[in-house]
Length: 327
Length: 246
Image 1 (cartoon, rainbow over the protein chains, first blue to last red):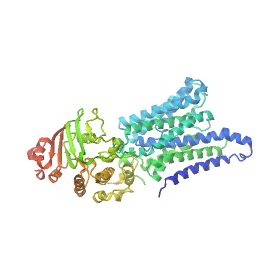
Image 2 (tube, chains in turn brown, purple; image 1 turned 135 degrees about the horizontal axis):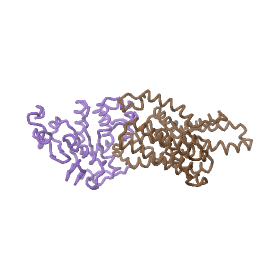
Image 3 (cartoon, rainbow over the protein chains, first blue to last red; image 1 turned 90 degrees about the vertical axis):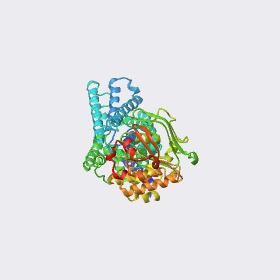
């Protein structure tokens, strides 16, 4: 039986359901024009950001994990998000461009930052032939350095500059508005379409570059293309929602465990499930009315323990240590 | 994705001219014709793997027309040519069935391969949970399945790097018999290995001996191979030669 369309529809359905749930928090939305205005101006941008960022981060993570041959790779953990945050911080605090130009300046700067840090981690992994654990450690080092640099930047810069430090380090869906969403949203949708188109080639990379080449997939070209798309998705996501950790680790990992490793399914489904998860977090924030929690606080609260559990079971490093995988 | 290009039976061959990779391989001319099985031998670091990678087209060469395959493009080649490499690890715990479906047109081994390698029983197993020999059988099957459609009509190039590693003797015998069937069908087969004993059983095959990246001997096993080769090319004293290889 083909589980693909079923799983995909299920995940998209869940997202829609969660969006509807959010609508019900505005009881008079159908009749009251004030409620409608509030929904259009405040809630809808938040929901759109959550959907876009959730799917972009999950899809790019699922891809990066195959590219780095490392199921632990997550843009938040291996320093790609913080690279983007740092370059955004430099743009804002440095006052290089007028704040009116930040609408497009931020996504571009974040893309460049993400691209630089992903190239760095990829080269490290490839050239130094690092083991899985040390790729993650190198990423954590890059991430820490970027976060520290960003914090210093804010210490010396104007602390109130456009967005605060918590936003860049922990993420939030509450800082978007339609103009930046228009630019960033188109870039994200574009990147995700490109990723979905390349998803079947990704299966050829599981057994390394040589085996990909042997079945007619040019591995270096593909890797380069996919790295740039991932950096675009992560960078632009950071520009509208800050650094959000663990989504990219959580979603593809659970999906692979449940449904296998076929990227033709995993890539689009990661997008749908990532969106659902982020909308769920928006709903939690709505339900807590009054307190807006940083997104990473919630994702890390769920993702952190699972990360530790997976490490404890030794499943992710099983190949390396010759241990046994779970089913 | 792939073109319908195929090889005309009569001029099916691989020719290498002036292949030069500094400090690894230096071959002025080498040609493999249809319906041949070549045992690629040589000491560690002699350039066996490098030569196989060059023939497979996955090692970039400065001289682009150094290796010719009747003008096939890389995409079309993936239907004609397979190579078993020495490192096939993955970090994701892929099942045997997933490896087959990602790398071959099949979801399980066709009957002729299954009969010899008995791998379909592992379809739902994570490959890392299999023993070394079982993994090697899976990789051998995967590799042959990639080009099986072409191999059945004698239009495939099958390259293997150390295929006998960890393989039980019974499987070595059966698999070698399958290779000989494929050879009679017209395929080009090159096997790099260290199992000298097989040469005594395979008199009609060819042997190619490499030393520091250069061809030392290439020809019919029955005519060219003998105990003297062990002394000349493998650094063995006459007194050290094991009885069964004399």
